[in-house]
Amino acid sequence: MPRGLLIDLNDGSPRMEITAGLRCPSFSGSNGDQIQTGGVVGVTKTPGSTMVMLPVTTTYAYPDSISLIPSIGMMTGYADNGNGTITQSWWHSNPRLAQRLTAGAASYVEILAVSQNGNRGLLISESTDFTFISSATQFMGCVWFGNFTVNGSTPLPASGIPFASWDSPDVSIAFDGTNLTSFLAHDGYGDAARPVTIRLAIFARVDPTPGRGLTFVNPDGKVTFSTTRKPFVFRNAFWNPASGAANASGNMVMICRTGFRNRNAGGWCNMKHKGIIFSGGVVSSASNNTKFSWTDQYPIIDERTINLNIPLIPAMY
View (tube, rainbow, N blue to C red):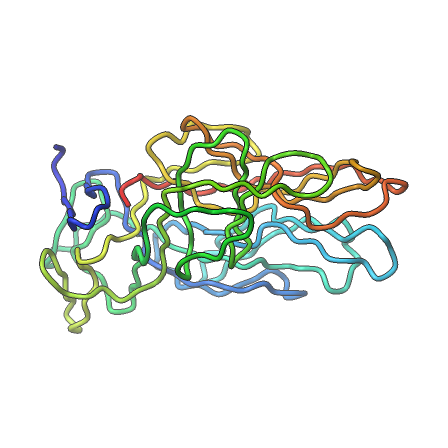
């Protein structure tokens, strides 16, 4: 076993080994969908930290009041302005539309810089410095984990950000902010729900609870870390759906929509959200569920995939 911190809760989940290279990000904030706000959202920013976005709304579509063809939007990136704000960038099929989305729902975490402050605590060389964590620091903890079956549209068993691994070559899974959606990946008319059992871990901002094991209390008397709940850990690994399929073996991928795809079938032009296929340890982007269908007399054949870094985390939950 490598040197570091071992967390074994004897709860049926894998043992967690926090070793050099892992980070335990601090929760920085979240936002809901925003219309015509300029795409700027506020976050907590620690000097020297690296911001990571956990996107929820990456694509959207809604009817156009003067056209059969819906208006479509997709997140194209984000920027850390370094001053406690994040700016999202979006592509729109109809940029003149007054009610277009300019910021999609997302959460943000920051990876704190490695430092040795000489304070009390635990330092794992090359890993996040737990030596001093202020009372303003907020951690993401695992609020639910286990095997979970998704079939069609299935609500999350707990609120938070879903990460998962599974093995199915032709089923696409996505997340709409409330439900996981599991459908056969195809371009035909209509949707075909498919049951898939996934290994699911859900993370949310939680206050650590002291108990048996290792607990940190900062000078303000606030519990900032506890092994009674597994923390959200990260090894700076990402998958960019726009870059194509990638090896994610040994990891869990954050579930989200990965773009959209318009194709003709059955006399209709069908706009489908795209989700994720996870098969043989490889992740890829593929059609998920239908959002709109309109007559194929006015076809808009298009496909776009998000050019965003989607986090991968070790399969230790």
